[in-house]
Image (tube, rainbow, N blue to C red; front, top):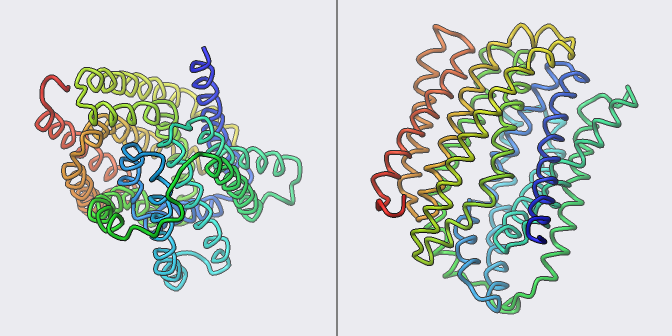
Length: 413
């Protein structure tokens, strides 16, 4: 009974976070001008992409190692990861100024960008670590304050106070929420019994981890590069105003991925990793089937509901630009659905340590996106971007499915 209650609370917190993020992007479409919403979209994807350079996807290695390590040695592992992060901060934080030097983002956003980038990285790593340590409920609270509570506060403030309806209000709320999440995560982690904190940084362990994480980082940078380059490319083709519509629609669509990550993936893929580590084919097969069935069913349900409600929602916004570009929504919804369904074979391969297949899929998918968008842009204009997304994610779904079937014994499928 207690386990059921914990899971329901988890789902409630993550569901509220999801709704809050959706509500924020939707209300910003009402309160801000489309160009401001477009700028907010560029800022968020730039921060999201910058996180990979600060973290180097090292959590992929750490998660597996934490699950295998004894509590008496976990502190040394985490201390070593912190040392790596400090080195990466020193290297990559100064390099982010290039975004502003090239005028991809306005200079007035620089201090906000730096503060948010660091806070987002710390809270993201805390969240992942708490999940790995089987503290899903606390991880959900960290996620809620990091990405949910402040969204509700900002929407309330903007609704009640018209002068606050500007991008700066959003940035202040974002920093406040991330700071609270960081304090909660650190406080809970401090209370978890882990030994080895006084031991020296394990540079050999870091070197081993980097050999594993770096190829995956390349793959992740390619995958997330699709969801970063698309905004900048779309702005170049259509302008900052129409980018506001793109940001609104992609925000609505990616709510599906957030929901699946919170309600399905977070709970099932650690169990699949453990089943593989214990050589338990039956348990792996059971969890994989649950993952597949829940992903397909919820993706279908979400897509139907989204298409039914998008028209009345856009009419309520009372901004003609968004209704005029409703064609974007259908293509972005298709692309997102293909991406989410592609996570079924993705987690199957990841849980069994078949990283090479994932690396190839992501790099090739990025190439497909660049090639198809470049080829279609002269003919279809800005629609080439969602077309390119759909082509890339369809390719990755097919490739990962084929590789999972090829690399997984029949009794594990």
